[in-house]
Image (cartoon, rainbow, N blue to C red):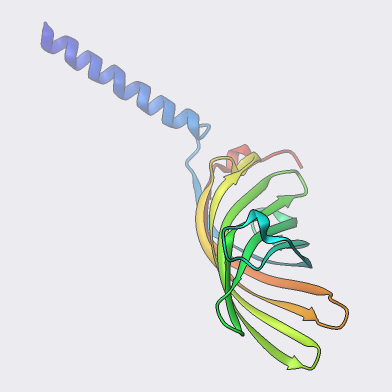
Length: 183
């Protein structure tokens, strides 16, 4: 009789575990696939007082782009920046937030390295290599996971102070596609 109760209890526990896994993904498996795209926008540089010690500025970027799984997006970026030499540096911890037209969003934690080159007098280019990891999402990206990289260029006009950045992103994400918000 005791063995029958144990087997019954084990069966019940397995059923609950199976049901909770199915409910967590609305009965759908996570959709894992490549993600990629690009964005461009305007940069600003601020006080590093909210950054860890040694940062020289806090970077802000606001732009638009196109990203697979989201379509047209707005992009918001922030991170702390350190100079490692006269022509190299690194950035992070930082966030990149992509928001689709329907409100679904994907937030990435990122870190980057960069090299500064001077193509002409009065102009700097910062050549960027970055790594990212999904840390949060809304809509169909709630509970998403993933990692990837990117490369970009910041174009800084030393005369006017204007700065723009263009970045290409790639990687893999997994999410519950059945949670898609209404467009």
